[in-house]
Length: 325
Image (cartoon, rainbow, N blue to C red):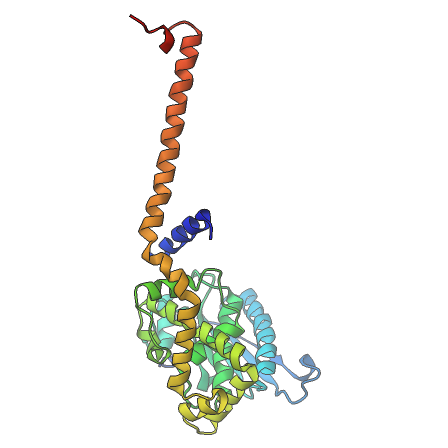
């Protein structure tokens, strides 16, 4: 890595340091129903008809949600070889108070949407009134993925990181540089095991975002090493009542704790080199500022020399060779 790349990396890394309850029924929002049926998925004749009931004050937004859900439904159904047999309700909250009333007040303030899988319910904050850190497509696909995955698991509990990582995979939630939070965690020795994410909703936002990133990377690693079909098998084993240890042993050859260690070793191997620059970040930043300082000092000195030469040429001052006594 050349010097310029190191300085850029140091500057980039430095920027890093800088169960929900179902509430009352939606009131005042019209409900629009859409259907995804057999004709929508030629070649997948066993799909059940699914109804989407959307409660939103903005009818244009409701139609946009319908289009997104249709597309996401198709991808998730093919991925998990699963279908939904009951209506999916999407409630769009226009205010924080409205949103919190749907969650029973037990939802973190950094959240913008959630799914109650057993009720096929998705609640989101309206993009008309709230700023998202992701697209509406990603948010809806993420929450619909939760409903599909729990249906696949037969209502059995799955590790939280599996749920979030799969949802992020299928909603294509990844931003360039997002994994730099992992570099920071390695540098500060604040990385944590996948199993510690079960209470994710109680995490502060920064730790929650790191959890989502690790979850995405863990699922990506699983898909790469064992294949997406093995992931489907893993969920099936859990649905059949097998323990997490047994399910992981059957699909990866390691118990649950063994897979976690395997993933942690992978993360350290992949990002440890980059975390080295965190140890020397002050050095690289200081060097960068020193170069900038020397550049301006040199420029200032050159300017003074040129001004002196001009004055000498005009005879206003004598040159050094004429300064004799």
